[in-house]
Image 1 (tube, each protein chain N blue to C red):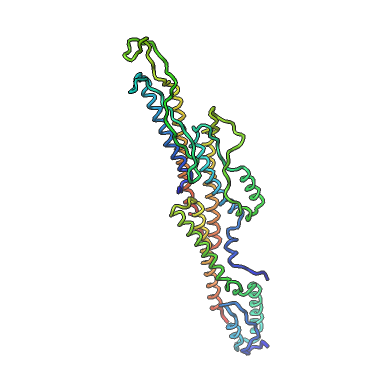
Image 2: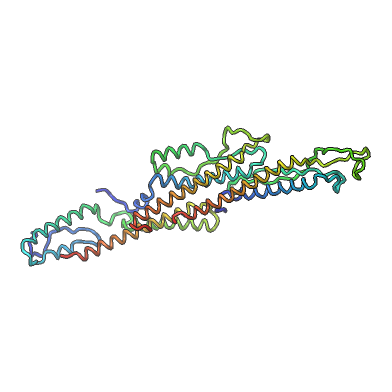
Length: 133
Length: 136
Length: 134
């Protein structure tokens, strides 16, 4: 199917890491959301990957699910806050900015690397077309 | 007087062991790129083990090239891809793909592919020159 | 036997396909105005024909498919068909082997060029023979 070698694997990885970056962006945006629609503070979203072998023998990757991280966030003593509990403790989301930033760095590095792989593959195919010229 | 088959002449045109080895190596490097792209795609996948060309294939190809045996090179099929042995996991989840190393292999491999293509091209244009006596 | 002025020659029927020398050798026996130089000319013609015999190791026709030239053309054609098959596989999406397809079409082109050049050489040689001064 592909004249460009390995393009399916690279394309699947670009999609998967794009999803991961979107989840990280959402986590960072909601780092201070103390109440969501279900009444609880925001739960950090975690993306899980799995590899699969496609028809052409490429080892691709796909997102198998986006789950909430159920670990509890920190609680702050803030009785004046409208979302604080009866004991004056305010439950915060379990999003840590440093963890998210590290995840973001590795996700964007992976994205760039797969972009390089796709570009390199295209260059290889173009060199193949120049055989004999 | 030796019997002379004119159809064998066509095959003997392309019988140089270096030329056949370059053709085979184009296949090998293309397949290796596919393996490396798959490794890079799974750089964040838990428990993934990197995959590469079987080292025994490269060893036997090198031996055939050094000995100059064209037929055995032509008989060699496509190489197998297998999980690389003895590689330590780089992450706690068992994934042993290192992004920088994979990128380095990818770049080297792309250059190998271009080099083999160049070699094949120049062999063919030299043949054409020898046949026609003209540069083009 | 090979006396000057005698139209009959005892050269064998050299089976060279389209370049049969029979027609030429018969003409050499005509009367020539130059005296004893003809003997030298005849010897040189002898040597020329013997050397040609040495280079042509067998007649152009073989048993088997009936003609070695036909074998040659068929093998060049086979290479061309192989290249065409690979190209159509790429076009229909069955094959992803771009480099092998390019190499196969280049090899077919080289084989065809070889056939063309051999044909040209053969035609040149034939025409040179036709022009050969008696």
